[in-house]
Figure 1 (tube, rainbow, N blue to C red):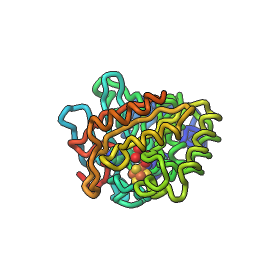
Figure 2: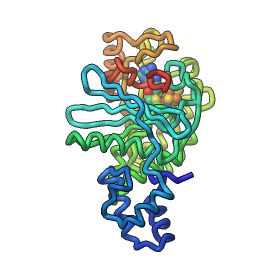
Figure 3: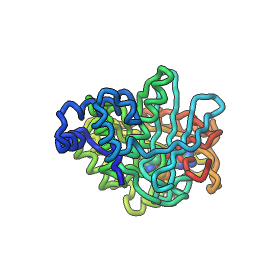
Figure 4: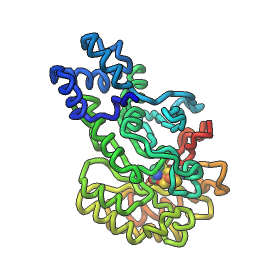
Length: 344
Ligand code: SAH
Ligand code: SF4
C-alpha cells in the first residue's frame, strides 16, 4: 500500500528524498507544493523532474480524504463536509466563517469512546483513531478551499469528532506539521485542543509546554452531576481535574477555556453557576457557555436565553471572564456535539 504524504514530518520526507539519492532541496519543493500551493496531484508538481514525480506517485498518495457530502448553513457562514476515509469510515469537518476569522473544527477520531450523554459523536461509540495525515489533511483541504475564495484560515480547533487526548501523539504531530514554517506555518497559538478532561493527557500536555490552547469540557461543577452526563468523570473526578488545570496554568502561564453546554434544568442553575465560580476562583480562565445543541438521541433541551444570561451574570459578578457562544450551523447538524457520520 502506498503511504500518505500528509503523514510525514519534513525531516521524514527529507530522509526519503536522501534515500532516493535526490538533492535535499527536492524535499523542500515537495513540501512547499503540498503546504503552500495545496497541490494534490503529481502532475501539478511542475517544479520536479518527471522521473521524480512518477516515483512519488509509485510510493505515495497525496492525501486520503474523499469529500462525499457538503452542507452549507442557511446563513451561509458554516459549512460541514463529510469525508470518506480509506477504510470506508467517515468523519466530519466544519468550517465557520466570522467577520474577522475563519475557524475550522476538525476531528481527531472516528466516533468517540467517552460516552458523554448529550453528544452525538459519543453516541456512535469509538471506531478508530485518525492518523496524523488524516488530521493534517482536514486543515489543508480547508485552507485550500478558503484560498480559492481569497480568504485564509486563521484558527484550528479540535472540537469535531473524537477526544484528541485519547489520540495524543498523532494530534501533537499534526500540529507540528501544520506549524512548520517551511510549509503552512500556522502559529501554535492558533490551535485549540478541547478535552473531556483526561488528567494523564493534560499532565503530558503540560510537560509539552507548547503555545497550543487548551479547552476543558467541564459542564458540571460537582461530581454527582458531572458523572451523570460525562461518565469519564468517575475516573478523573473534578478535584483531580482542577488540580491538573492549575498545574497547567502555573507551568505554561496560559489561560484555560472551560466549556459548558447549558442544558435546561440540568446544569443551568444558579447553584451550578455558584459552584463553578468557587471552583475556578483565582485561576486564569475563561468560561465559554453554549446553549445545548439539539441531538436526536438525547432528551435534554437547550437552556433558555434568560437562564443562560443569569448563569453568565453570576460568573461575571464573581470576576470570572465568561461569554455565551453563539450556536453555529445548527440547521445542518454542524454545531458542537452534533457531529456523527450517519447524520448526513
Ligand atoms: N472530545 C472533546 C472535543 C470534541 S467535543 C471534548 O469533549 O472536549 C467539542 C465540544 O462540544 C465539547 O466541549 C463538548 O462537550 C461539546 N458538546 C458535545 N455535545 C454537545 C451538544 N449537544 N451541545 C453543545 N455542545 C456539545
Ligand atoms: Fe467524546 Fe467530546 Fe463527545 Fe464527550 S463531548 S463523547 S469526549 S466528542
